[in-house]
Length: 233
Length: 373
Image (cartoon, each protein chain N blue to C red):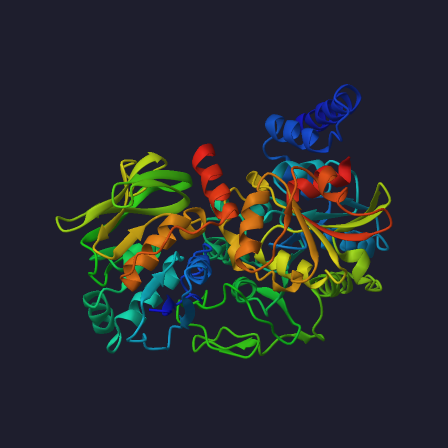
């Protein structure tokens, strides 16, 4: 595959905490592997494209999160995501986006049904969890760093596996685990954006999305940045 | 009587701070005063006409512009530069004056309105900034709207091209809605009044719930942020009976010219996506230094660097420094701009030859260190 389609879902709603950068990092790293990446921005009124390779959701304020879930439950959108998962597409959802792809979440005091793509529910916590976060991920086999800024606490159901074990920070609210993963579906509370801080994770998503193993690329600045953040947090 | 004594002690504390610690002493006095007399803001405000200025960007320069406008009408007290929490407000109010023009932090505006009962509140704009502290833009907007509805004696003046400002003005009993013909807003996708997807036609929004910038009380031509802020300061001045000042944008931007080893540096304060985007438009030369820190007032998270397009720097010589130089360097790298990374401003500026002109965009804490050094 020399072309890849990255679908950035509702950036105007889910772009408050800088997560739009994940798409840019993916496209940038893809170039190193000789893949042409095409970033498609899907806005609130659009239907999701059926042929995305990577679907991205970011963090948002409550009102924006409510609009996003409404749009994703409209028409054929949810079905498109299910079909995408079946054919091996990747989903990376951060913070409010992570809650959206779970079974249930709360926003502006309302209980809302999520998309049910990950077996998690999110409930409001008693205080906002804000700060640097570091985890180690058994799925990936390396440490991840990022920044968290959320009220929600997420509880994993039996078919979801924790994405990272918390070293510093709060993650899902228990200060033990962050995010959840099931196959190629990843949810996390890490901003940063997560793929800018952890370029190896971007490579892993590209590998999963294309089904090909790429040679390790050399980008000294990316490595320096990632290594430094892992050292200081 | 006790208030007078508290003021005297606070002034003495400021005096000691100046003499012994060689600090400005301005916020110390406010801090001491509020500790000794928590109701000081309420009491001291009674004898003055108070004008508050708040918003994400432009507070300090707009406050300065308003001081110069109002000073034609009488004596004016003002907050120490950039000190916009309650202690800065208290420090300003200790001065004897007819008017007080107060710069107030967005999150602290409610308390200041409640206590100082201002005659006029000028709301400039509200965009994403220091989200580790503000949490959500909407959270700040809700507080503004709530305080506006609880202050029927106060006139709220603001730029309704910003939907968050418009909601606050709609909640006020008295308002002056100003428009500059509309402009896009990075956080404007959701109607802050009803929560629906906000309908924008080019630069203007209109929600079925009624929130819109299309029916202002006064409309001006579009311009830079500095132009807009000075224009609104003139509107507030006119309301109080003052003549307008001439708008010289260069003077209103928060920038300082310095010469470092023969290199001419124009240093401009940048602190969030909106102010960076505005500042990047002004980088017209070939050389730029970008300084990024992430201390409390800078915002401790740097994710927002990814909200900004730096493509305008393409082809220029870019040097980065600051505590988070690597964050900005990597962000630029992904946008195809290779910056030189240096460990501090001195090293950054020494990369340029004597005689060169360099535009410096500096994080809040870096700007203050450079300007006060």
